[in-house]
Length: 562
Image 1 (cartoon, one colour):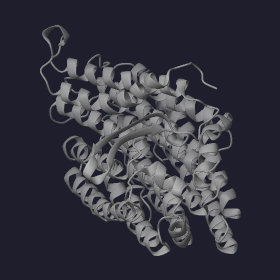
Image 2: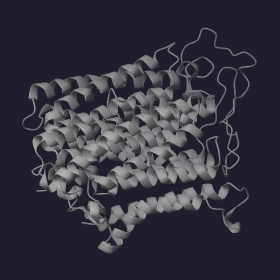
Image 3: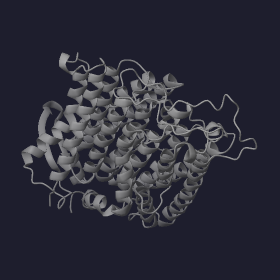
Image 4: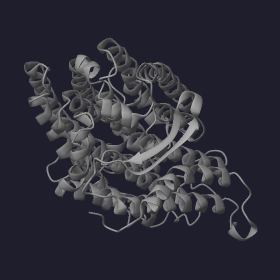
C-alpha cells in the first residue's frame, strides 16, 4: 500500500535528490547572490537559501515516504546501484527500507526546522554563508549515512558530518567552544579509524562491501573469530558516536558549547548514526560476533542509563551551578543507553524498541535543546541556580507558554505514557526480559531491572528541573532591588543578517516581583510545534512507526529471509 502511486524511477530520483541536493546547496550558498535575490540585507539571501534548500529536501522526503510501499517495508526501495570504483568493487548503492525511512524523514525535518529558526535567530559568529553551507553539508552527510548500502560509502558519509559539526561548535559556539570542538573531533576521528579497519576486514574476508548481500549472507561467509574482531572494531567506532558510556565524555562539552541549532542536530540526528550502524551492519552481518559481545554491550548500556541519570541529578541539585544544556546532554547518555540495551537483546522486540527510542529521542531532545536555547537567550544564562533564583525563576509566571512547553518536553523525556518516549523504553525492557537464544536470561533480566530503576531516576531529575525552572524556588526576600526591576531583554542580541527578527517587545506587564519575559515568538512556534505534535502522535499511534520497522527488523535478524 502506498499513499500516492509513484514510479520506481521517480522514487530513485527522489532519494538521490535528497542525498545530493544539500551538497549542491552548500556550494551555491558560497556563491554571490544574484542581484534580484539579495533582499534588503546582504545576508538575507543566503539565509533564505538555506531555508529553501532544506525545505525542498523535506518535501522530497515526505513525498518519498508517501510513495513508499508500506505493505513491503522489509524490501529495499528507491534503489540505485552504480559501479563507482570497480577495482575495489565499491558501488554507489542507495536504498531505503522501514528502518532507514523514519530516520531519513527525521533528519530532513530537524534540519529544516533549524534552518528556519536560524533565519530569525542566527547565532553570533562569522559569515552566514559559511554557517548555511556547513549546515547543508552536515545534512547531506547524515542523509547519506541512512541511505547508502555500501560499507565504504557508509564510512565516507559517516565521516562527512564531523568537519561541519566541528566548525559549527568552534566558530558559532559559546564558552569553551574551541576545547569542546577539539574534544569532539579527536574522539570521533579516533573511533572512526578503528571502525574503518573493521569495515575493511568484513569487506575483504567476505569479498563484497555490499550491505544487502552481507545481510542476506548473515555471517555465513565469515568465521566466528573474524566476526568477533569486526564487531569489536566497528562497535568501538559506533559506540563513540552513539555515545556509549564510558566513551561519552565528549558529548556534554560539545552540547554545552554548541549553538542551539548545533545541539539540536547533534542530539537529534548525529547520535542516531551510531545506533543505526549497530542495527544495519553488525546485527545482520556479524551475528555470532554480536552474540559474543551482547552481554557486555547491555552492561555498558545500563551503566550509562544510571550514570547519565545520576549526573543529571547532581547537576540539578541546588548550589551545584549546573548548566541546563549540560544536563540535557547527560540525559542523552541515559536515553541512548536504552537504545543500546534494545540492540543488545538481539530480539525483534528489543531492536524495534531501540529504533522507536531513536526517533522519540530525536523529537523530544531536539525540542528540549530548542527550548533551553530560548531560555538561555532570555535570561542570558543556562545556569540552573540562576534560573531557579528569586530573580530568574517561575517561568510559568513570566513566560507561561514557554514554561508549559518546557514542562511538556520534560515529561515526554521521562517516558510519560501517551507520549513518544514511553514506547521505546518499554519495548527495550520487554526485549531484555526475554533476550535472543544463546544469551543469558538471568543477566539480561538483571539489566532490565537496572534499566527500569534508571527510568525512576530520569523522572526524578526531570521533575526537579521543571519545579526549579518553571515554578521557581521560595526566597525569604521576594521583593527585587531597583536594578532587578529593570526589564530584561526578550531575546539575546539578534544577528544583523537575520531577516524578520522580532523586536524585543512582546513582554507583558512587569511587576516588582515578576518581571515578564518575551513568551514564544511566532518563528519559535513554527520551529517547535511540529516536534511537539509528532511527540504526541508517536505516543498515541506507535503502530504507524512500528509497522514500518518490525517487518524490516524481522527480516534483518533472519538473515534476509522473511
